[in-house]
Length: 492
Image 1 (cartoon, rainbow, N blue to C red):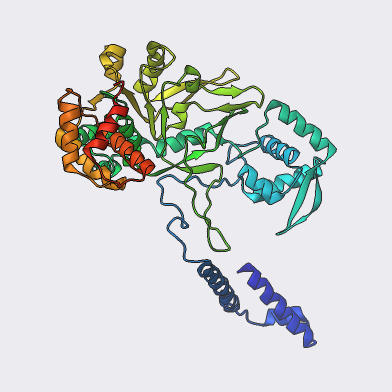
Image 2: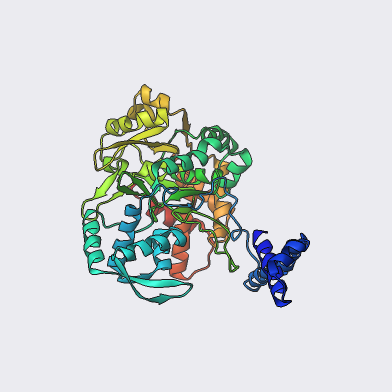
């Protein structure tokens, strides 16, 4: 409005000057037109409407926006920082990332640098201008959209080498520990209460009886620990892998966490599956998402007999100076499965003592390479899967901290038969009830062999492989079951 009033004032002064009169006297004698600013604003409205129409046309030309293109409907959404202070970053920390990146890359535009360290370009551009004033970088040329190609000066190259000697990391700018803790709290399993329908959907591809599901339901809802024990081959690992699907699909985690100059890498492509938000199809992206965070599927991390104590602590690569988060931290807001519990290379008592406090208090203490101790959330459903009897592995004090102990029992004969009916068509085999009758009588009842949930899949797979190799009809027969059992049970 003030701008329109100024234009109105100048226009009236110009009119008075053109008529040969004293413009200031004319202005004092005239009545102010209070409607002119409103008229001018109304005249500007078509421009806004035109820009809006251009945005809509651009969006429709690129195709209708999908559900993922719109702002994600997650319960927690990291918001883009307004300043380095808001991101809890110092200018020196961001400077180090920029200089190390240019040392490795050679030259890059300001927008490439901002994309590399995952910070808004408007903040990075201001710092790059200051770095040029300080003669740490120089302009190598111009770049589109009022940007420049930057490269290091001799002074900047020397400083970058010193930064590189301390730590070679030049990826995403780290997220503060307090912001990470707030993110875990907002996406905690404690706030998730899967229903019976969600649990049935998670185990839709497994044949589980109602009694098993009714026992798993409360254990999953608790968000705490549980023991899955029983004979091998009854789907303990398969059950553990699918539990996470009963909770919400996606969470946000930082790519890296910064604590007093130490950088801990949290996002792990080996254990985390990224679920990116689709790019906006219009010219303007109004979503203000903090790109230092990455959207992933709620994690399920499985550690078997290879688990060692070092995997449960912050580890540092001494050659790069980059620290790696422990497994329990990477599995926060998801599921951590200790498979083949009792068969790890470390003593069971040592592993149990490491878990006692986190299971009780729901937070964990970690030691950083610089000697500092930090407290981080311990927010996951931890599943101990074992073929051994839990009473033979752990004492009563630890069992008390694992509220649910669920046995994966052998299937009944009806369930065993049903598995053959389900799996044979999936393997492109013609099912035969007579062949299954023969299998049960000759290779199970006659030998007092127990049923296992894995047997139908494994035996049918041997039949499939034989038929494929011999190029015979894909039909299940007693003779093929004899051959499959000879191979499969030869030393069992």
